Image 1 (tube, one colour):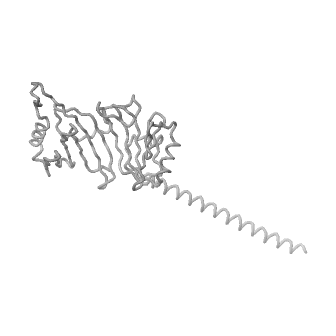
Image 2 (cartoon, rainbow, N blue to C red; image 1 turned 90 degrees about the vertical axis):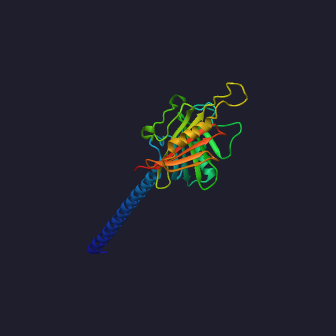
Image 3 (cartoon, rainbow, N blue to C red; image 1 turned 60 degrees about the vertical axis):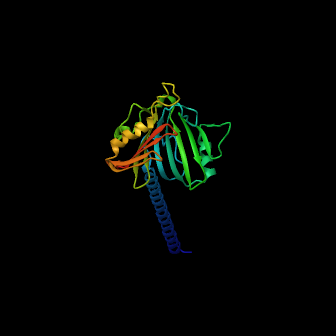
Length: 279
């Protein structure tokens, strides 16, 4: 082979190598961009799914496994001596998150069981729930194998339990309290319904004055007195209704749907106020 032929072959080889390098770099760049776009879409999807998560929920410590969307997220404070948490506490504060998950029941429960720093094993374990410690929190994770709905509860440590709800700085004061009952629970939540709603709740224990004259009958029908009082206060409100068979009183005020339930068999008044979620 003469010199000229060799030279031509070297040039062809060089051109082929340059083309191969060019194609390789191009494909790598495309893959990198695809990954970036995919990552951006995942972040966007995750951000959207977290729209109804309360600021303050410890998402970095207690993740929401294979989250599709949040149905509701609430913070509860309870200090009713006659009411106990799943852990046996009489005073407790906790986040309650209802989610839709892409995980099956077994996958969901196994994830949290393995995620816990330490699992809490009851004498009578529940097949649909696991419990454990994550950092300073006690956590329950439940999945009842229905409609892909799952539940996460994150309980505050004892030194952070409070009666004051940190989200009540915007509490709509639409219900007049009374010396005949005492507040024992409050909650605030974001609800993924009707375009997004905020929800404030309280329940009160009605104080029974008892039978002071020992005639075998209560001296005062506290519920009768209270119902009469609040009928007088709210019967003029927009969309007011009262169901005497259930003790359920409803009205609309300042953009909130208000429900006050006078529940004799529980000895309580339940208050619920829902309004449009502010963006």
